Amino acid sequence: MQLARTEFLAGLRASLPLLLGVAPFGLVTGVAMSAGGIPPLAAMAMSLLVFAGASMLAMTQLFAEATPAAVIVVTALFINLRFMMYSASIRLHLAGLPLRWRALIAYLLADNPYAVCIARFSAHPDDSQARKLAYYLGVSVPIWFAWQAAVGTGVAAGAQLPAAWKLEFAAPLAFIAISVPLLRDRAMVAAAGCAGVAAVLAHALPLKLGLALAAAAGIAAGLLAEQLAARRPA
Figure (cartoon, rainbow, N blue to C red):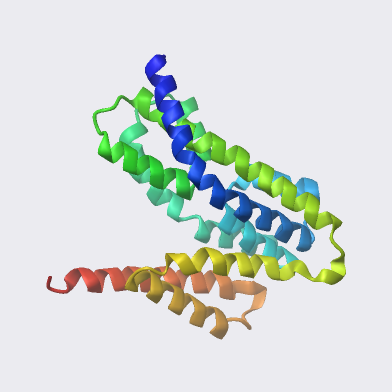
């Protein structure tokens, strides 16, 4: 019990710097959902059920443009495909836990907690699964609470702002802020460039299918760039 508490506190300390990025992102997401016409209760339900900022912003933008629900769902699935890779990776460390804990781990899985926890688990491969679980919860739970609080604040603030302010730009602006820092290698640049070009060329497609096509083009370009880089002689 003492070891689990120590690991939880270690995870909690590791999560604190991440909150500096989580809070403003959640705030902007909440404002964007409110500006996109999503009712406050529905916005908070989306935050609680989806718990994935990038897909929430995409869904908000599509909802504001009266896109069919099926297209919104497919787009969100495309954007969240990365969680399948996260799950496969973290399963190596936590697969032996009871189902109830694995379900909670899956629900709390997000970009920042995954990055911090997988680095910790890789550096301490001999730790027990109980200790790894305690560390994972120490990182993930504070981020979950901070995200929900930030989204709720953004939704409440956005509902009070005049419609004449035209805050619909918040969603694409947040996407730009998320994407630019990730452009650190050729694969990411290729993925972003191809996705951008595809989004422009496919803008006129019906049912807003251009966004899903752009996501697929970006993924394909990024994978191809990584394969080409791996084949180059050192």
